[in-house]
Length: 350
Image (tube, rainbow, N blue to C red):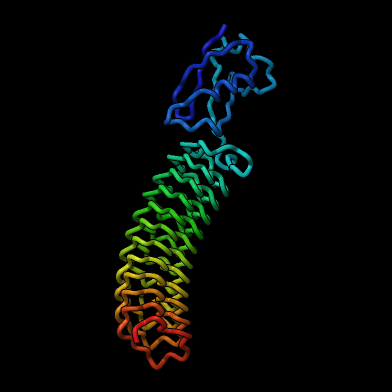
């Protein structure tokens, strides 16, 4: 005769399940895993089930459930989800249908590729216990729309949220000191971003391809903007680079076609290759006295740029730095320049 036992889900809800005494523990586990939890519970795809009697876990070798177990008031069935560190698709788990992830509060580290490719993931809760989000941890989670990273996290790994194309909002806490390379690359729905004062370096391609990003605040703590860090952020209209930055990397803002004006602070000494290439709406730019090098193709294709003053501090100008600046009518090159690259003003008005 079938009897009802409790099924305690991770969220605290208790449901009942009809169980026959002749069922093996393994069969009972399959029955529990087949149970459909509500939307508020973690999806059963990656679940494991444990049974406890008088506080002791039963194992699969138990032949049958037996009447004595069913009669016990202390019988409890707990619906678990494996810790994130074990739920890694590179180990063969089928994670494509995972909708809701709540990482256990015992977890300190989310491993590389832990949930990469979970295309159906809609909601993610990262607990305060997590300090490090590994490389590719949530890459290509294309249905994830919002994300809150807790104050405990200090590092966001390379490609951690790359290609999360539905992510519209993001909160990076003041605890984060490092944003890895490609961390939010191709998050094409992200509209605004505030980087906290704790961050000192923005990795290469960290926000490249965030084509919906319209505003950006870079804090005074940042000293380096990596190569291609904001490349192809085609909706970015305004930008303030803080006085702490000493180097603007290669391709850092290349393809930011909506950027209209730019002030480079006195702290910057080097403008990388193609740093502002393809910023076709850029009408004015201020290069400070601190800059000594302007890289190859630095302002290539800035077709709306009308005038430019190069300061006395500059000694090297790379190849074709102003090629395709078709609206540039005046430019002043100081006597300090000892090296002028090939085709410096090719396809610019003479």
